[in-house]
Image (cartoon, rainbow, N blue to C red; front, side, top):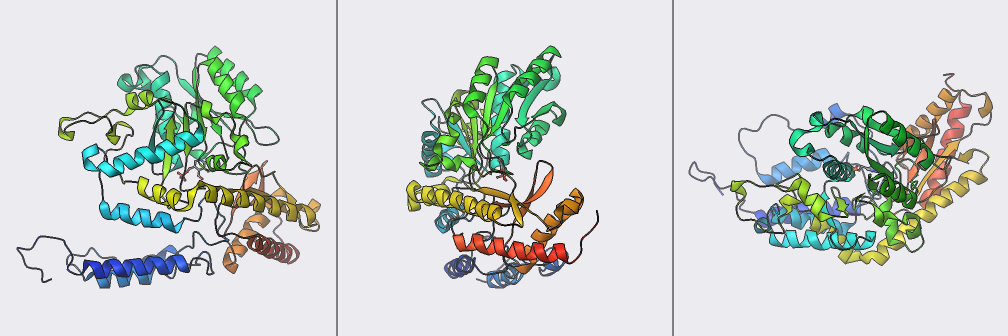
Length: 487
Ligand SMILES: Cc1ncc(COP(=O)(O)O)c(C=O)c1O
């Protein structure tokens, strides 16, 4: 189509051809995801330099733009979803979820109001109902889809603050007589303290409760801390429990924490961003017993439910408390409906996230997802067994779910300083990454470095786990005998 000054439409003449090409590119990417290297060895400058970066005053043909994107992305795309990408808690996305995401972007609905996206609104309600059922919430529950666990935790703590600090929406925390305090274990995710910062509570009012030798929050110390804070004029209002901590996958004692919060009149928020998927599994479900008693729950379908990024959920025991916090009114928003999603979340315009979640769960079914969760947990045990049977390794923590952590032991390790041992683990992982065989991220457990495998991946096999183990053993032996830093 020739652009003329009176043609202001942005429509594309060969839209179908471009869509076909994009579909082909995505298909190629997914088909090639198991190829090595898992992570490209490159630099920010090199990658930035591979894009035409000047502000485009005049346009270009979409095929040219696609060529540019392909040339820059393809050589360096991190193969998230590779069977040996076991870093962070970033799981292998299910291709069916990608179909849902593509449709969602194409339909571009605006479900802030029912009228902005009737099907997107209804579908969000349906997928949230599934999660409310999975987590055991009864009538009156509420929830919202969000970008991920960080925001899901922020949403939970926001409603906790609103419910427990009367007048906070109007006066802010500076209008309150007593500073409010929040409690999480020393294994709590960083997003909890970040939420406290964003909500005006402040990092200093987040109490880090020590965990026991199995990394579970110590209730006796929690009790002492809350009592001491009350004596000192504070207002303890919320406990955040982990159901699958980021370092070791540990689950806090949820029933005991629910009892404690009931007794103390405090809000219980459970961060099940990763571990929530264990509810799918008949074998592991019991480990989250008591989670239904939480006032709010964070879970990330973009973790162990294999939904493409971004997809998080906050569930609330009471939708009334959720809506009391987020109800949005403005003349320009027009006619109200009971189902307007603007009243369930602080965002107005937002991406429809339900389609990719719906597509994933409808396509595979929860039984199949549960089988993968079980298999991933067995693989974590396999890695720990390999570590405990080897003279070169020791398990660093037990695996409640599918995160396995172990330490490499150089032959003369008693003579090594802790700093040198810590550095060795960083070096082993860097070398593993350079080899192209796999990509893992480290953990600090009991103050010492360890390698950490987060096996939340539908493509990983036992052979992958064995290959990672032998590759890291070879690297560790090579590095530790070839000379070491004397840090
Ligand atoms: C336990 C836990 N909570 C919260 C988060 C934050 O989730 P997201 O990265 O989706 O914001 C993570 C991320 O790994 C996590 O492991």
